[in-house]
Structure formats: C-alpha cells, structure tokens
Amino acid sequence: MTLDSLPIGQRARIAAVDWAVLAEEEGQRLRALGLEAGAKVAVAHRGIFGGADPLAVTIGRMTVALRRAHARAMQVELV
Image (cartoon, rainbow, N blue to C red; front, side, top):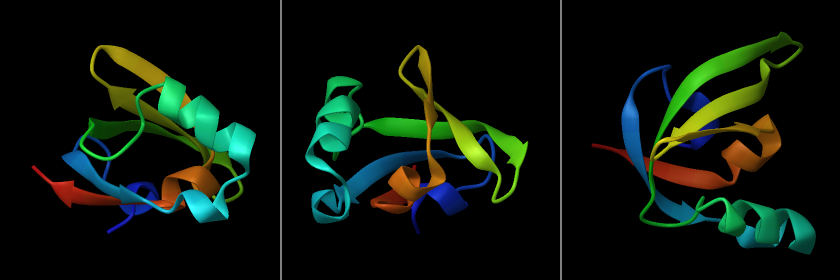
C-alpha cells in the first residue's frame, strides 16, 4: 500500500521510498521532514481539490502537507 491510499487516522510505517520518481530537491525536503523508511506516519486530512490533494500527514508530533504524487512514492506497512 502507498501512503496516498492509507485511510485517514490509520497509523503506518514507511517501508520504502522510491526516490527515483522524485526530483532531487523534493527528496531532500522530504528527508529533512523525516519522511523516509522507518518513520511512523498517519494521514490526518485530505484536500478537497481534484485528486484529494494535498494530504496532511502526521509524523511524530508534526503535521506536514504532502502532495499526493509524493505520497504515492512511499510504500507503507500498517502498524
């Protein structure tokens, strides 16, 4: 399952990130936010615009806005 399809409120751990589909600067930003393999995350909200973009993702005590395309690059495992 990818992060973009994770149900709201369901906790998961990022199992892998396909960094190759992301631009280098996007990958750096996501790593700086802690969004990499092993991080525990949950989707807090989905946007109301087409494709439910962006996603509000909780990581630790922080909530970040994440494009759906970026979330789609992250494989998650339910915890």
